[in-house]
Length: 275
Image 1 (cartoon, rainbow, N blue to C red):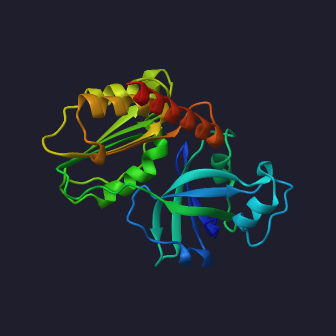
Image 2 (image 1 turned 135 degrees about the vertical axis):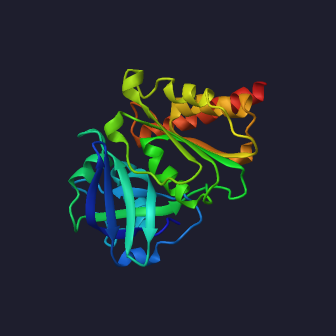
Image 3 (image 1 turned 30 degrees about the horizontal axis):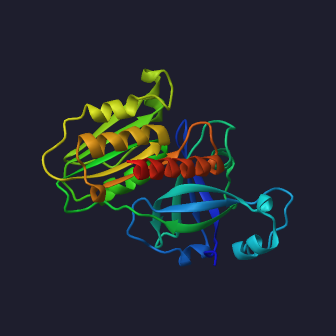
């Protein structure tokens, strides 16, 4: 059975940087949206296809039963930056690179009253308050989850955050405080290539703090693959102390990325089976 669709309306938007748009949404549908413990809380935003008649209110069970797959709404996964039931607001930050893609251009063009429908939330990570220190690593796609984690980590607990964006103008305000070390990386220094080794190389050069680290590492899939190898094999970070996953893959939309991840899982399972 499909999860119920949360149906909201855009309240306002804000340009956080040249490549980041904040959408604030609310409405009666927000009352049923649950509060969860996860700081990487995510939703599947639904984009109905032009020219297709969908049941109203949107019911994904009926859509799946009555329509062929190529007429289902497109889905894009985004992290909920913040949720405030008292204020009646849910915030999602969208990476926007011109007319490329689906969700970014939608967010850039969104106006108050526009409809925002989504499934969720999901999530799997929250910073362990008992960890000795925290490592947060990611690119623009991971910034909302990293910012939410920074707000949750106990005050004064050491944090190293390594954040990759296109250039200095793409820095955004992130929660800081005593013990929080934020290091911005710019792709312009690495030839502008999101698939470069810049992020893994910088993490490999870090001097780890003493004690048990709890790490959150998310971003472009190829970079994340190298970061996983480094953190588990060379740094000895325990599996239970590491939340790590690719959020996207250069040159692929979300449907193509799901195919990429399936192939990766098959490759890993084959490698494990053959020793």
